[in-house]
Length: 151
Image (cartoon, rainbow, N blue to C red; front, side, top):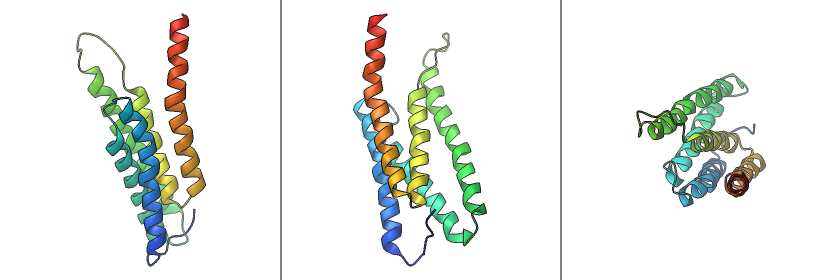
């Protein structure tokens, strides 16, 4: 984790911009697929994660204890958002047990991790993770469809 100096506005703006950008990459793919959790949701999840981590870095000064606790809280908290995505889709047909929204929930979870990476100043990790996530969501979807047609 790269330290955060509160007077270094360029670093702060760059980290927050990166968080919005990487969350937006994932969110754009979901938006194009007309998923409920789209562009804005993923951008906000990533931005919020970055803000939480950066706040921990600000007050943690030479201690990773605060930051690791914040990351643990993000991981736990984002699970509720993901569960809400799954529950909202399953609720439409109360007679039938149907699980939907797992990929959207996973994408929200990944967007949070991208925000954490951006907030920690791990530029390459955040960008590579966003590109990899977008490829998995977009390319693997076509592979799944092709495999389903072959059955």
